[in-house]
Length: 589
Image (spheres, rainbow, N blue to C red):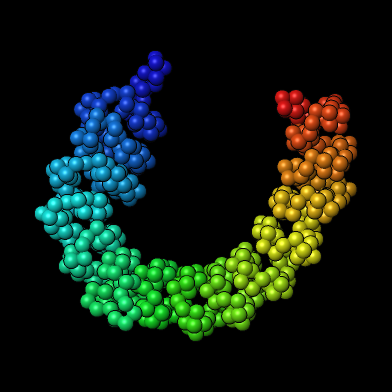
Protein backbone atom coordinates (compact mmCIF):
# COMPACT_ATOMS: atom_id res chain seq x y z
CA UNK A 1 0.00 0.00 0.00
CA UNK A 2 2.87 2.35 0.78
CA UNK A 3 4.31 1.70 -2.67
CA UNK A 4 0.95 2.43 -4.30
CA UNK A 5 0.53 5.62 -2.26
CA UNK A 6 4.03 6.81 -3.08
CA UNK A 7 3.45 6.04 -6.74
CA UNK A 8 0.29 8.14 -6.80
CA UNK A 9 2.02 11.00 -4.98
CA UNK A 10 4.77 10.86 -7.57
CA UNK A 11 2.25 10.98 -10.41
CA UNK A 12 0.51 14.01 -8.89
CA UNK A 13 3.84 15.81 -8.53
CA UNK A 14 4.65 15.03 -12.15
CA UNK A 15 1.49 16.81 -13.30
CA UNK A 16 3.05 20.14 -12.26
CA UNK A 17 6.55 19.30 -13.51
CA UNK A 18 8.34 21.46 -16.07
CA UNK A 19 9.48 18.26 -17.80
CA UNK A 20 6.96 17.45 -20.55
CA UNK A 21 7.81 13.74 -20.42
CA UNK A 22 6.87 13.61 -16.74
CA UNK A 23 3.61 15.48 -17.40
CA UNK A 24 2.83 13.08 -20.22
CA UNK A 25 3.43 10.10 -17.95
CA UNK A 26 1.12 11.47 -15.25
CA UNK A 27 -1.58 12.24 -17.83
CA UNK A 28 -1.45 8.66 -19.08
CA UNK A 29 -2.23 7.59 -15.50
CA UNK A 30 -5.15 9.95 -14.89
CA UNK A 31 -7.46 7.07 -13.97
CA UNK A 32 -5.07 5.90 -11.24
CA UNK A 33 -4.76 9.43 -9.89
CA UNK A 34 -8.54 9.94 -9.94
CA UNK A 35 -9.26 6.68 -8.13
CA UNK A 36 -6.66 7.54 -5.48
CA UNK A 37 -7.99 11.05 -4.91
CA UNK A 38 -11.59 9.98 -4.52
CA UNK A 39 -14.75 11.51 -6.07
CA UNK A 40 -14.83 14.68 -3.97
CA UNK A 41 -11.26 15.72 -4.74
CA UNK A 42 -11.63 14.72 -8.39
CA UNK A 43 -14.56 17.11 -8.73
CA UNK A 44 -13.11 19.92 -6.61
CA UNK A 45 -9.41 19.71 -7.53
CA UNK A 46 -8.50 17.41 -10.44
CA UNK A 47 -11.10 18.56 -12.99
CA UNK A 48 -10.44 22.30 -12.36
CA UNK A 49 -6.70 21.65 -12.58
CA UNK A 50 -7.09 19.89 -15.93
CA UNK A 51 -9.27 22.73 -17.21
CA UNK A 52 -6.41 25.13 -16.42
CA UNK A 53 -3.85 22.89 -18.16
CA UNK A 54 -5.25 22.92 -21.68
CA UNK A 55 -2.42 25.06 -23.04
CA UNK A 56 0.10 22.21 -22.81
CA UNK A 57 1.87 20.38 -25.63
CA UNK A 58 -0.29 18.61 -28.21
CA UNK A 59 0.90 15.12 -27.27
CA UNK A 60 -0.16 15.67 -23.66
CA UNK A 61 -3.47 17.25 -24.63
CA UNK A 62 -4.28 14.30 -26.89
CA UNK A 63 -3.83 11.86 -24.00
CA UNK A 64 -5.81 14.16 -21.71
CA UNK A 65 -8.70 14.30 -24.18
CA UNK A 66 -8.79 10.51 -24.30
CA UNK A 67 -8.48 9.92 -20.55
CA UNK A 68 -11.14 12.45 -19.60
CA UNK A 69 -13.72 10.30 -21.34
CA UNK A 70 -12.80 7.43 -19.00
CA UNK A 71 -13.28 9.28 -15.71
CA UNK A 72 -17.07 8.96 -15.45
CA UNK A 73 -16.93 6.37 -12.66
CA UNK A 74 -14.35 8.37 -10.71
CA UNK A 75 -16.70 11.34 -10.31
CA UNK A 76 -18.92 9.63 -7.76
CA UNK A 77 -22.11 9.32 -9.79
CA UNK A 78 -23.68 10.15 -13.12
CA UNK A 79 -25.15 13.34 -11.69
CA UNK A 80 -21.65 14.86 -11.88
CA UNK A 81 -20.79 13.74 -15.44
CA UNK A 82 -21.37 17.21 -16.85
CA UNK A 83 -18.27 18.45 -14.98
CA UNK A 84 -16.11 16.60 -17.52
CA UNK A 85 -17.48 18.90 -20.21
CA UNK A 86 -15.54 21.86 -18.77
CA UNK A 87 -12.00 20.71 -19.73
CA UNK A 88 -13.27 18.87 -22.81
CA UNK A 89 -14.94 22.03 -24.11
CA UNK A 90 -11.65 23.86 -23.82
CA UNK A 91 -9.85 21.04 -25.68
CA UNK A 92 -12.41 21.42 -28.49
CA UNK A 93 -10.89 24.84 -29.24
CA UNK A 94 -7.21 23.93 -29.55
CA UNK A 95 -5.44 24.23 -32.86
CA UNK A 96 -4.36 20.59 -33.26
CA UNK A 97 -7.13 18.68 -35.06
CA UNK A 98 -6.29 15.28 -33.55
CA UNK A 99 -6.80 16.72 -30.05
CA UNK A 100 -10.13 18.25 -31.03
CA UNK A 101 -11.31 15.02 -32.63
CA UNK A 102 -10.44 13.03 -29.54
CA UNK A 103 -12.16 15.59 -27.30
CA UNK A 104 -15.33 15.34 -29.41
CA UNK A 105 -15.12 11.55 -29.19
CA UNK A 106 -14.83 11.71 -25.41
CA UNK A 107 -17.73 14.15 -25.14
CA UNK A 108 -19.91 11.79 -27.15
CA UNK A 109 -18.82 8.92 -24.88
CA UNK A 110 -19.77 10.70 -21.66
CA UNK A 111 -23.01 12.06 -23.12
CA UNK A 112 -24.66 8.63 -22.94
CA UNK A 113 -24.32 8.84 -19.14
CA UNK A 114 -26.15 12.17 -18.92
CA UNK A 115 -29.74 12.65 -17.96
CA UNK A 116 -32.18 14.98 -19.77
CA UNK A 117 -31.58 17.81 -17.30
CA UNK A 118 -27.81 17.68 -17.75
CA UNK A 119 -28.19 17.74 -21.52
CA UNK A 120 -30.52 20.69 -21.33
CA UNK A 121 -28.54 22.67 -18.76
CA UNK A 122 -24.96 21.83 -19.77
CA UNK A 123 -24.57 19.97 -23.08
CA UNK A 124 -26.69 22.10 -25.42
CA UNK A 125 -25.36 25.38 -23.95
CA UNK A 126 -21.85 24.03 -24.54
CA UNK A 127 -22.66 23.49 -28.23
CA UNK A 128 -24.07 27.01 -28.34
CA UNK A 129 -20.88 28.48 -26.85
CA UNK A 130 -18.61 26.52 -29.19
CA UNK A 131 -20.64 27.59 -32.22
CA UNK A 132 -20.24 31.27 -31.27
CA UNK A 133 -16.52 31.22 -30.50
CA UNK A 134 -14.46 33.63 -32.54
CA UNK A 135 -11.76 31.09 -33.32
CA UNK A 136 -13.04 28.69 -35.99
CA UNK A 137 -11.57 25.51 -34.43
CA UNK A 138 -14.25 25.56 -31.73
CA UNK A 139 -16.96 25.86 -34.38
CA UNK A 140 -15.49 22.88 -36.23
CA UNK A 141 -15.72 20.79 -33.06
CA UNK A 142 -19.31 21.87 -32.46
CA UNK A 143 -20.34 20.31 -35.77
CA UNK A 144 -19.67 16.81 -34.44
CA UNK A 145 -21.75 17.11 -31.27
CA UNK A 146 -25.33 17.21 -32.59
CA UNK A 147 -26.19 13.63 -33.47
CA UNK A 148 -25.57 12.21 -29.99
CA UNK A 149 -28.40 14.14 -28.33
CA UNK A 150 -30.78 15.13 -31.10
CA UNK A 151 -33.01 12.05 -31.00
CA UNK A 152 -33.62 12.29 -27.24
CA UNK A 153 -34.04 16.08 -27.12
CA UNK A 154 -37.36 17.82 -26.59
CA UNK A 155 -39.06 19.56 -29.50
CA UNK A 156 -37.84 22.95 -28.30
CA UNK A 157 -34.31 21.65 -27.92
CA UNK A 158 -34.44 20.09 -31.39
CA UNK A 159 -35.38 23.44 -32.91
CA UNK A 160 -32.52 25.06 -31.00
CA UNK A 161 -30.06 22.42 -32.25
CA UNK A 162 -31.36 22.80 -35.82
CA UNK A 163 -30.84 26.56 -35.68
CA UNK A 164 -27.29 26.17 -34.40
CA UNK A 165 -26.44 23.55 -37.06
CA UNK A 166 -27.91 25.78 -39.79
CA UNK A 167 -25.79 28.66 -38.54
CA UNK A 168 -22.63 26.51 -38.67
CA UNK A 169 -23.53 25.24 -42.14
CA UNK A 170 -23.50 28.83 -43.43
CA UNK A 171 -20.27 29.81 -41.66
CA UNK A 172 -17.89 32.07 -43.57
CA UNK A 173 -14.94 29.73 -42.95
CA UNK A 174 -14.80 26.80 -45.46
CA UNK A 175 -13.35 24.43 -42.88
CA UNK A 176 -16.38 24.92 -40.63
CA UNK A 177 -18.75 24.29 -43.53
CA UNK A 178 -16.75 21.20 -44.41
CA UNK A 179 -17.16 19.89 -40.84
CA UNK A 180 -20.88 20.61 -40.93
CA UNK A 181 -21.17 18.87 -44.29
CA UNK A 182 -19.31 15.84 -42.93
CA UNK A 183 -21.83 15.51 -40.09
CA UNK A 184 -25.02 16.29 -41.99
CA UNK A 185 -25.69 12.71 -43.09
CA UNK A 186 -25.04 11.36 -39.60
CA UNK A 187 -27.48 13.87 -38.13
CA UNK A 188 -30.04 13.03 -40.81
CA UNK A 189 -30.26 9.45 -39.56
CA UNK A 190 -31.44 10.80 -36.18
CA UNK A 191 -34.19 12.96 -37.70
CA UNK A 192 -37.65 12.26 -38.96
CA UNK A 193 -38.16 12.46 -42.72
CA UNK A 194 -40.09 15.72 -42.31
CA UNK A 195 -37.24 17.41 -40.48
CA UNK A 196 -34.70 16.05 -42.99
CA UNK A 197 -36.64 17.57 -45.87
CA UNK A 198 -37.34 20.90 -44.18
CA UNK A 199 -34.04 21.49 -42.36
CA UNK A 200 -31.23 19.44 -43.87
CA UNK A 201 -32.13 19.12 -47.54
CA UNK A 202 -31.60 22.86 -48.26
CA UNK A 203 -28.26 22.70 -46.44
CA UNK A 204 -27.35 19.55 -48.37
CA UNK A 205 -27.96 21.28 -51.70
CA UNK A 206 -25.98 24.30 -50.53
CA UNK A 207 -23.00 22.12 -49.61
CA UNK A 208 -23.16 20.32 -52.98
CA UNK A 209 -22.90 23.69 -54.76
CA UNK A 210 -20.28 25.21 -52.44
CA UNK A 211 -17.47 27.10 -54.18
CA UNK A 212 -14.83 25.11 -52.27
CA UNK A 213 -14.28 21.52 -53.39
CA UNK A 214 -13.16 20.61 -49.86
CA UNK A 215 -16.77 21.17 -48.80
CA UNK A 216 -18.25 19.39 -51.83
CA UNK A 217 -16.13 16.34 -50.99
CA UNK A 218 -18.66 15.40 -48.32
CA UNK A 219 -21.52 15.29 -50.83
CA UNK A 220 -21.13 11.58 -51.61
CA UNK A 221 -21.35 10.45 -47.99
CA UNK A 222 -24.38 12.67 -47.50
CA UNK A 223 -26.04 11.21 -50.59
CA UNK A 224 -25.57 7.71 -49.17
CA UNK A 225 -27.08 8.71 -45.82
CA UNK A 226 -29.94 10.71 -47.31
CA UNK A 227 -30.85 8.03 -49.86
CA UNK A 228 -31.39 5.71 -46.92
CA UNK A 229 -33.37 8.33 -44.99
CA UNK A 230 -35.78 8.99 -47.85
CA UNK A 231 -36.17 5.26 -48.51
CA UNK A 232 -34.84 5.45 -52.04
CA UNK A 233 -34.02 1.75 -52.38
CA UNK A 234 -37.60 0.86 -51.35
CA UNK A 235 -39.20 2.79 -54.21
CA UNK A 236 -40.99 0.47 -56.69
CA UNK A 237 -39.26 0.07 -60.05
CA UNK A 238 -42.36 1.37 -61.81
CA UNK A 239 -42.32 4.65 -59.89
CA UNK A 240 -39.73 7.28 -60.89
CA UNK A 241 -38.13 9.19 -58.01
CA UNK A 242 -39.78 12.46 -57.10
CA UNK A 243 -39.40 15.20 -54.51
CA UNK A 244 -36.53 14.78 -52.07
CA UNK A 245 -35.55 11.38 -53.53
CA UNK A 246 -35.07 12.97 -56.96
CA UNK A 247 -33.02 15.82 -55.46
CA UNK A 248 -30.66 13.38 -53.75
CA UNK A 249 -30.22 11.32 -56.93
CA UNK A 250 -29.56 14.38 -59.10
CA UNK A 251 -27.02 15.65 -56.55
CA UNK A 252 -25.19 12.32 -56.56
CA UNK A 253 -25.02 12.31 -60.37
CA UNK A 254 -23.78 15.90 -60.36
CA UNK A 255 -21.05 15.02 -57.87
CA UNK A 256 -19.90 12.16 -60.13
CA UNK A 257 -19.42 14.75 -62.89
CA UNK A 258 -18.09 17.55 -60.68
CA UNK A 259 -15.60 20.02 -62.14
CA UNK A 260 -13.10 19.09 -59.40
CA UNK A 261 -11.28 15.79 -59.87
CA UNK A 262 -11.10 15.40 -56.09
CA UNK A 263 -14.90 15.28 -55.85
CA UNK A 264 -15.10 12.84 -58.76
CA UNK A 265 -12.42 10.75 -57.06
CA UNK A 266 -14.51 10.66 -53.87
CA UNK A 267 -17.56 9.61 -55.89
CA UNK A 268 -15.64 6.90 -57.73
CA UNK A 269 -14.22 5.38 -54.55
CA UNK A 270 -17.66 4.99 -52.95
CA UNK A 271 -19.73 4.24 -56.01
CA UNK A 272 -20.62 0.76 -54.80
CA UNK A 273 -22.11 2.29 -51.63
CA UNK A 274 -24.02 4.79 -53.77
CA UNK A 275 -25.37 2.01 -56.00
CA UNK A 276 -26.57 0.01 -53.00
CA UNK A 277 -28.14 3.05 -51.35
CA UNK A 278 -30.10 4.05 -54.47
CA UNK A 279 -31.32 0.58 -55.36
CA UNK A 280 -31.33 -1.61 -58.44
CA UNK A 281 -33.32 0.61 -60.81
CA UNK A 282 -31.12 3.67 -60.39
CA UNK A 283 -27.93 1.58 -60.29
CA UNK A 284 -28.74 -0.04 -63.63
CA UNK A 285 -29.87 3.24 -65.16
CA UNK A 286 -28.60 6.77 -64.67
CA UNK A 287 -25.96 5.79 -62.12
CA UNK A 288 -24.41 3.22 -64.44
CA UNK A 289 -23.97 5.89 -67.10
CA UNK A 290 -22.20 8.14 -64.60
CA UNK A 291 -19.98 5.27 -63.49
CA UNK A 292 -18.95 4.59 -67.10
CA UNK A 293 -17.72 8.18 -67.30
CA UNK A 294 -15.74 7.75 -64.09
CA UNK A 295 -14.04 4.63 -65.48
CA UNK A 296 -12.99 6.72 -68.48
CA UNK A 297 -12.21 9.91 -66.57
CA UNK A 298 -9.39 12.14 -67.75
CA UNK A 299 -7.65 11.93 -64.35
CA UNK A 300 -5.74 8.74 -63.55
CA UNK A 301 -6.57 9.03 -59.84
CA UNK A 302 -10.30 8.94 -60.61
CA UNK A 303 -9.94 5.94 -62.94
CA UNK A 304 -7.89 4.17 -60.26
CA UNK A 305 -10.57 4.70 -57.62
CA UNK A 306 -13.37 3.69 -60.00
CA UNK A 307 -11.55 0.54 -61.09
CA UNK A 308 -10.94 -0.53 -57.50
CA UNK A 309 -14.68 -0.85 -56.76
CA UNK A 310 -15.77 -2.30 -60.11
CA UNK A 311 -16.43 -5.79 -58.72
CA UNK A 312 -18.60 -4.39 -55.90
CA UNK A 313 -20.48 -2.14 -58.29
CA UNK A 314 -21.08 -5.13 -60.58
CA UNK A 315 -22.83 -6.94 -57.74
CA UNK A 316 -25.52 -4.23 -57.79
CA UNK A 317 -25.99 -4.53 -61.56
CA UNK A 318 -27.69 -7.06 -63.76
CA UNK A 319 -25.27 -9.41 -65.63
CA UNK A 320 -26.40 -8.10 -69.00
CA UNK A 321 -25.66 -4.53 -67.89
CA UNK A 322 -22.20 -5.55 -66.74
CA UNK A 323 -21.51 -7.18 -70.09
CA UNK A 324 -22.91 -4.38 -72.23
CA UNK A 325 -21.67 -1.34 -70.32
CA UNK A 326 -18.85 -2.15 -67.91
CA UNK A 327 -16.79 -4.64 -69.90
CA UNK A 328 -16.04 -2.18 -72.75
CA UNK A 329 -14.69 0.22 -70.12
CA UNK A 330 -12.55 -2.52 -68.58
CA UNK A 331 -11.15 -3.45 -71.99
CA UNK A 332 -9.83 0.10 -72.20
CA UNK A 333 -8.51 0.08 -68.63
CA UNK A 334 -6.38 -3.06 -69.07
CA UNK A 335 -4.42 -1.05 -71.64
CA UNK A 336 -4.35 2.16 -69.57
CA UNK A 337 -1.11 4.10 -69.70
CA UNK A 338 -0.91 4.45 -65.90
CA UNK A 339 0.41 1.54 -63.84
CA UNK A 340 -1.74 2.44 -60.83
CA UNK A 341 -4.93 2.17 -62.88
CA UNK A 342 -4.02 -1.27 -64.23
CA UNK A 343 -2.82 -2.39 -60.79
CA UNK A 344 -6.06 -1.29 -59.17
CA UNK A 345 -8.11 -3.16 -61.76
CA UNK A 346 -5.91 -6.26 -61.44
CA UNK A 347 -6.53 -6.39 -57.69
CA UNK A 348 -10.32 -6.80 -58.14
CA UNK A 349 -11.01 -8.06 -61.66
CA UNK A 350 -11.05 -11.71 -60.56
CA UNK A 351 -13.98 -10.92 -58.24
CA UNK A 352 -16.15 -10.14 -61.28
CA UNK A 353 -16.34 -13.84 -62.12
CA UNK A 354 -19.19 -14.73 -59.71
CA UNK A 355 -21.30 -11.88 -61.12
CA UNK A 356 -20.73 -13.00 -64.72
CA UNK A 357 -20.99 -16.79 -64.37
CA UNK A 358 -18.77 -19.43 -65.94
CA UNK A 359 -19.54 -18.99 -69.64
CA UNK A 360 -19.33 -15.20 -69.63
CA UNK A 361 -16.19 -15.33 -67.51
CA UNK A 362 -14.47 -17.63 -70.04
CA UNK A 363 -15.67 -15.62 -73.04
CA UNK A 364 -15.23 -12.05 -71.83
CA UNK A 365 -13.29 -11.87 -68.56
CA UNK A 366 -10.52 -14.39 -69.17
CA UNK A 367 -9.06 -12.45 -72.13
CA UNK A 368 -8.76 -9.37 -69.90
CA UNK A 369 -7.14 -11.51 -67.23
CA UNK A 370 -4.59 -12.84 -69.73
CA UNK A 371 -3.76 -9.33 -70.86
CA UNK A 372 -3.04 -8.28 -67.28
CA UNK A 373 -0.99 -11.43 -66.67
CA UNK A 374 1.26 -10.32 -69.52
CA UNK A 375 1.51 -6.75 -68.22
CA UNK A 376 4.98 -5.24 -68.23
CA UNK A 377 4.54 -4.11 -64.62
CA UNK A 378 5.26 -6.93 -62.17
CA UNK A 379 2.95 -5.45 -59.51
CA UNK A 380 0.01 -5.77 -61.89
CA UNK A 381 0.78 -9.44 -62.50
CA UNK A 382 1.20 -10.04 -58.78
CA UNK A 383 -2.20 -8.51 -58.04
CA UNK A 384 -3.80 -11.00 -60.42
CA UNK A 385 -2.00 -14.01 -58.96
CA UNK A 386 -2.69 -13.00 -55.38
CA UNK A 387 -6.47 -13.09 -55.90
CA UNK A 388 -7.15 -16.13 -58.03
CA UNK A 389 -9.58 -17.87 -55.70
CA UNK A 390 -12.72 -16.14 -56.97
CA UNK A 391 -12.13 -16.90 -60.64
CA UNK A 392 -10.75 -20.35 -59.88
CA UNK A 393 -14.05 -21.29 -58.20
CA UNK A 394 -15.97 -20.23 -61.30
CA UNK A 395 -13.94 -21.61 -64.23
CA UNK A 396 -11.78 -24.29 -62.58
CA UNK A 397 -8.04 -24.75 -62.39
CA UNK A 398 -7.54 -26.46 -65.76
CA UNK A 399 -8.46 -23.41 -67.84
CA UNK A 400 -6.69 -21.09 -65.44
CA UNK A 401 -3.46 -23.07 -65.35
CA UNK A 402 -2.84 -22.73 -69.07
CA UNK A 403 -2.23 -19.00 -68.73
CA UNK A 404 -1.19 -18.88 -65.09
CA UNK A 405 2.04 -20.85 -65.26
CA UNK A 406 3.94 -18.60 -67.70
CA UNK A 407 3.19 -15.54 -65.59
CA UNK A 408 4.32 -17.24 -62.39
CA UNK A 409 7.53 -18.47 -64.00
CA UNK A 410 8.28 -15.00 -65.30
CA UNK A 411 7.71 -13.46 -61.88
CA UNK A 412 9.75 -16.17 -60.18
CA UNK A 413 12.72 -15.30 -62.37
CA UNK A 414 12.29 -11.53 -62.23
CA UNK A 415 15.54 -9.61 -61.88
CA UNK A 416 14.10 -7.60 -58.99
CA UNK A 417 14.44 -9.65 -55.81
CA UNK A 418 11.48 -7.91 -54.20
CA UNK A 419 9.26 -9.24 -56.98
CA UNK A 420 10.57 -12.76 -56.43
CA UNK A 421 9.95 -12.30 -52.72
CA UNK A 422 6.38 -11.16 -53.35
CA UNK A 423 5.49 -14.15 -55.52
CA UNK A 424 6.97 -16.49 -52.89
CA UNK A 425 4.55 -15.09 -50.32
CA UNK A 426 1.63 -16.07 -52.57
CA UNK A 427 2.77 -19.63 -53.23
CA UNK A 428 0.99 -21.28 -50.23
CA UNK A 429 -2.27 -19.64 -51.28
CA UNK A 430 -1.76 -20.80 -54.86
CA UNK A 431 -0.94 -24.30 -53.67
CA UNK A 432 -4.19 -24.46 -51.75
CA UNK A 433 -6.21 -23.18 -54.70
CA UNK A 434 -4.53 -25.17 -57.46
CA UNK A 435 -4.11 -28.54 -55.73
CA UNK A 436 -1.31 -31.07 -55.27
CA UNK A 437 -1.09 -32.42 -58.81
CA UNK A 438 -0.79 -29.05 -60.47
CA UNK A 439 1.67 -27.88 -57.84
CA UNK A 440 3.93 -30.91 -58.28
CA UNK A 441 3.86 -30.63 -62.05
CA UNK A 442 4.31 -26.89 -62.42
CA UNK A 443 5.41 -25.10 -59.26
CA UNK A 444 7.36 -27.47 -57.02
CA UNK A 445 10.67 -27.00 -58.82
CA UNK A 446 10.27 -23.24 -58.68
CA UNK A 447 9.78 -23.31 -54.91
CA UNK A 448 12.80 -25.53 -54.34
CA UNK A 449 14.92 -23.43 -56.68
CA UNK A 450 14.35 -20.36 -54.51
CA UNK A 451 16.20 -22.10 -51.67
CA UNK A 452 19.42 -21.44 -53.58
CA UNK A 453 18.60 -17.83 -54.55
CA UNK A 454 21.43 -15.31 -54.33
CA UNK A 455 19.42 -13.00 -52.04
CA UNK A 456 19.18 -13.90 -48.35
CA UNK A 457 15.62 -12.56 -47.90
CA UNK A 458 14.38 -14.73 -50.78
CA UNK A 459 16.03 -17.85 -49.33
CA UNK A 460 14.51 -17.17 -45.90
CA UNK A 461 11.03 -16.65 -47.40
CA UNK A 462 11.40 -19.81 -49.46
CA UNK A 463 12.30 -21.76 -46.32
CA UNK A 464 9.27 -20.42 -44.45
CA UNK A 465 7.12 -21.48 -47.40
CA UNK A 466 8.20 -25.08 -46.86
CA UNK A 467 6.42 -25.19 -43.52
CA UNK A 468 3.13 -23.98 -45.02
CA UNK A 469 3.44 -26.38 -47.95
CA UNK A 470 4.26 -29.31 -45.65
CA UNK A 471 1.13 -28.57 -43.63
CA UNK A 472 -0.93 -28.32 -46.81
CA UNK A 473 0.34 -31.45 -48.57
CA UNK A 474 1.50 -33.60 -45.65
CA UNK A 475 4.65 -35.12 -44.22
CA UNK A 476 4.92 -37.79 -46.93
CA UNK A 477 4.98 -35.22 -49.72
CA UNK A 478 7.61 -33.17 -47.89
CA UNK A 479 9.85 -36.19 -47.31
CA UNK A 480 9.66 -37.14 -50.97
CA UNK A 481 9.86 -33.75 -52.68
CA UNK A 482 11.49 -31.26 -50.31
CA UNK A 483 13.95 -32.96 -47.99
CA UNK A 484 16.24 -34.34 -50.76
CA UNK A 485 16.72 -30.77 -52.06
CA UNK A 486 17.32 -29.45 -48.53
CA UNK A 487 20.01 -32.08 -47.97
CA UNK A 488 21.68 -31.03 -51.20
CA UNK A 489 22.07 -27.49 -49.88
CA UNK A 490 24.63 -28.61 -47.28
CA UNK A 491 26.99 -29.49 -50.13
CA UNK A 492 26.94 -25.97 -51.62
CA UNK A 493 30.23 -24.07 -51.71
CA UNK A 494 28.51 -20.92 -50.46
CA UNK A 495 28.21 -21.06 -46.67
CA UNK A 496 25.13 -18.81 -46.81
CA UNK A 497 23.31 -21.42 -48.88
CA UNK A 498 24.47 -24.18 -46.52
CA UNK A 499 22.97 -22.03 -43.78
CA UNK A 500 19.63 -22.20 -45.62
CA UNK A 501 19.59 -25.96 -45.08
CA UNK A 502 19.72 -25.38 -41.32
CA UNK A 503 17.07 -22.68 -41.44
CA UNK A 504 14.80 -24.98 -43.46
CA UNK A 505 15.33 -27.71 -40.87
CA UNK A 506 14.26 -25.31 -38.13
CA UNK A 507 11.03 -24.19 -39.82
CA UNK A 508 10.12 -27.74 -40.82
CA UNK A 509 10.55 -29.00 -37.27
CA UNK A 510 7.07 -27.69 -36.40
CA UNK A 511 5.33 -29.25 -39.42
CA UNK A 512 6.81 -32.76 -39.76
CA UNK A 513 6.33 -35.93 -37.79
CA UNK A 514 9.10 -36.75 -35.25
CA UNK A 515 10.00 -39.92 -37.17
CA UNK A 516 10.75 -37.90 -40.34
CA UNK A 517 12.74 -35.37 -38.33
CA UNK A 518 14.76 -38.16 -36.75
CA UNK A 519 15.44 -40.13 -39.94
CA UNK A 520 15.73 -37.43 -42.63
CA UNK A 521 16.72 -34.15 -40.97
CA UNK A 522 18.68 -34.94 -37.82
CA UNK A 523 21.48 -36.89 -39.65
CA UNK A 524 22.52 -34.06 -41.96
CA UNK A 525 22.24 -31.48 -39.19
CA UNK A 526 24.66 -33.57 -37.09
CA UNK A 527 27.06 -33.87 -40.03
CA UNK A 528 27.16 -30.08 -40.41
CA UNK A 529 28.51 -29.72 -36.86
CA UNK A 530 31.99 -30.21 -38.35
CA UNK A 531 31.59 -27.45 -40.96
CA UNK A 532 34.62 -25.17 -41.34
CA UNK A 533 32.56 -21.99 -40.89
CA UNK A 534 31.81 -21.02 -37.25
CA UNK A 535 28.45 -19.47 -38.22
CA UNK A 536 27.34 -22.83 -39.54
CA UNK A 537 28.45 -24.65 -36.39
CA UNK A 538 26.62 -22.35 -33.95
CA UNK A 539 23.51 -22.54 -36.14
CA UNK A 540 23.77 -26.30 -35.83
CA UNK A 541 23.45 -25.78 -32.06
CA UNK A 542 20.40 -23.55 -32.63
CA UNK A 543 18.83 -26.12 -34.93
CA UNK A 544 19.40 -28.98 -32.50
CA UNK A 545 17.82 -26.86 -29.77
CA UNK A 546 14.76 -26.42 -32.00
CA UNK A 547 14.58 -30.10 -32.93
CA UNK A 548 15.01 -31.39 -29.39
CA UNK A 549 11.54 -30.30 -28.28
CA UNK A 550 10.03 -32.80 -30.77
CA UNK A 551 12.04 -35.81 -29.51
CA UNK A 552 11.87 -38.09 -26.50
CA UNK A 553 14.75 -38.24 -24.00
CA UNK A 554 16.35 -41.33 -25.52
CA UNK A 555 16.81 -39.65 -28.93
CA UNK A 556 18.20 -36.52 -27.29
CA UNK A 557 20.70 -38.49 -25.21
CA UNK A 558 21.76 -40.67 -28.13
CA UNK A 559 21.91 -38.29 -31.07
CA UNK A 560 21.84 -34.65 -29.87
CA UNK A 561 23.73 -34.53 -26.58
CA UNK A 562 27.03 -35.94 -27.99
CA UNK A 563 27.07 -33.35 -30.79
CA UNK A 564 26.46 -30.50 -28.37
CA UNK A 565 29.12 -31.84 -26.02
CA UNK A 566 31.71 -31.64 -28.81
CA UNK A 567 30.61 -28.13 -29.74
CA UNK A 568 31.07 -27.01 -26.12
CA UNK A 569 34.81 -27.33 -26.64
CA UNK A 570 34.81 -25.54 -30.02
CA UNK A 571 37.60 -23.02 -30.50
CA UNK A 572 35.14 -20.28 -31.51
CA UNK A 573 33.55 -18.49 -28.53
CA UNK A 574 30.27 -17.76 -30.39
CA UNK A 575 29.86 -21.47 -31.07
CA UNK A 576 30.45 -22.24 -27.40
CA UNK A 577 27.99 -19.51 -26.31
CA UNK A 578 25.09 -20.74 -28.45
CA UNK A 579 25.86 -24.35 -27.58
CA UNK A 580 25.66 -23.61 -23.84
CA UNK A 581 22.36 -21.83 -24.43
CA UNK A 582 21.03 -24.85 -26.34
CA UNK A 583 22.14 -27.24 -23.60
CA UNK A 584 20.41 -25.13 -20.94
CA UNK A 585 17.18 -24.97 -22.93
CA UNK A 586 17.15 -28.71 -23.63
CA UNK A 587 17.91 -29.51 -20.00
CA UNK A 588 15.04 -27.34 -18.83
CA UNK A 589 12.76 -29.01 -21.35
